[in-house]
Each structure stands twice: as C-alpha cells, then as structure tokens.
Length: 117
Image (tube, rainbow, N blue to C red):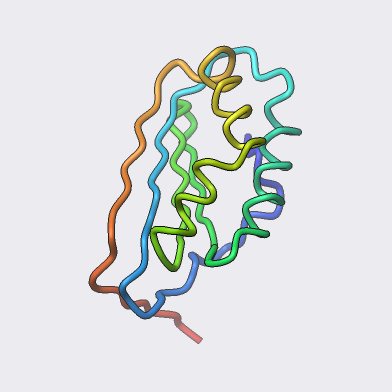
C-alpha cells in the first residue's frame, strides 16, 4: 500500500544537468502511526524550497521503499536537509518508522528521458 496517493504514472522529467538527487531507501517498522500525515506534510513543505524539482517514489510489496528527490543545486538540498520540520520528522523516523535506511546524494552530470506519446 502506498503512502503517496497522488503518485504520477510517469517519472519526474529529465532536467538539464547539473542538478542533485537525494536517494532515500527505507525499510519501515510495522507500526506506522502518524507516518502518512507526516509524509504528506513533508511532501508539501519540500515544494516550497526554491530549487526543488520533483520527487519519485517506489515501494515493493516486501517493504523496501525508495524516494528520489531532485534539486537544482546543492544549496536547495541543504535548505531541505536543515529545514526545522524536516529535521523533526527525521528524528521521529529514526525513533519510530524505520528499521533501516540509506541516503545517497549525487550530482547528476547526464540526464535524458523517453516518453511514448
């Protein structure tokens, strides 16, 4: 079951490089009390970060989830990483919602896409 009810059926478009991606891969705990509301709030907040480009989500039935967030520059990513409400959600995630996670941040040097239209 997805916590992203309005997940688009197409990936975020390819942007003109360079830009940055944050790849957040998770395995969640069984108790997700409060997670859907907090997740929705984070998705709204990140949209207000200048330089935020979009986000893709995927989750398999076994519980492995991947979120990829796209940012125009390192400053935008830093602004999101240090946002007070986001920091509080990160702490709650470690305390309650995640068995484990990894975060990978990368600078994109090449990007292209395809869309059967």
